Length: 558
Image 1 (cartoon, rainbow, N blue to C red):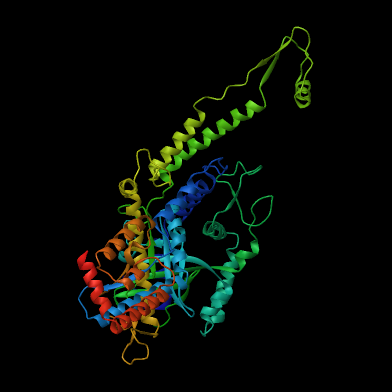
Image 2 (tube, rainbow, N blue to C red):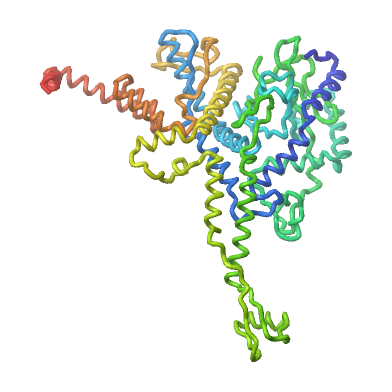
């Protein structure tokens, strides 16, 4: 894209591109509310289902395809390099893994995968601030793209993130500028003018949808509310949103555009209505040159559609059927305890007398009158029907008996069970691989940001020896960041452990390599103990060489 040079024209041009990117934002926000209602209530109308398997399914699937417990990254190269460079890459891999863990980016990824399963997509933004690297989840309704038919963010001409900032945050961004007072005056005037407009509703939805499990109010008089009513404050009468909040919040757009002049992304920051914050004098990428800070987390990809597909879609009708069947069983079971009786042969029984008799536990009947039990019986297939529905849901979601932790008839050996695990979960394994590639992209962005913005030195081997230090930016340009040995995917854990055991059995790897490969605690201490043990064994053999001869002869004799 060709960007205008004058700030006034750039603001108008950028606002038009922002509108282009956000053309479907309102529709997607409404869809997000519907999916959230389905997930947390198990119903389309917000009335909480007796049994809700949708939230359970999302959590279970997320835990199966991604886990931050032993997430590790590895850096390799396209070309072959000497051991010195490989040692540097190994040290850089350790630094990257620990940085992502220390900054809780792995936990952000876990939450993002959970949201992506629910909503179809979620975006993780890597930032480098005064405190260093950080990660921030951007919900899909906060994000927009220039072309929704392109499913790769890196191929978009423009992407836009929309959020709300406080007035103090805005002042922090512009306090160094000569026109700061004028900017604050315009921003505050617009905020107060728009306090009762649709933007306040957008902010309400932002607060609502960005939170975790919302408390959905389904009691009277809120059962008629479409989608339920979500409790924002602790008020038993329903949800409230303080009108004072909007007066302190400003809509903030961050637009990233491919600039034909710089052949890089240009970051444009605008506060509503059209207040240009950045750029001022120099158009530049505020993250890392030629790198977009956003990574699209998406488990169910769709061709030619960037927002993907929700896991809930395939289970909605079965969940609705399960809800209706459980309600039917509840009504019938209640009637079994509170029988439905008809009084025959009398005309003096009134509703009041009937209620009094039921409360007392007995009734006086006239001669010739009787009681007829009209209670419908519980169908013999009722609970079998529930079981069949849940089996259908497990089959569609990919969780059969083996993957659910239950036994499978006819399975008597561990190898047989592991084979069934592999053949029964192809879609789940594919999801895990897709997420693994996206996690590797996040790792690559974190590495690029550290290499470009931090001059921290690292060492290989002896830290006291000169020439062993290096910077991350000094690694060869053909490096690649990957997730080490499927360590992000619990579903691949057994395969990984078997390969490590086989490598040790064939003596392809040594003791230190096994310690690095296995998810063991205190790896550095274990490797130090192993090295000390080897030194002790070498010293013993040097003092008593006959031990080596005897050991060789004994093994040869056998």
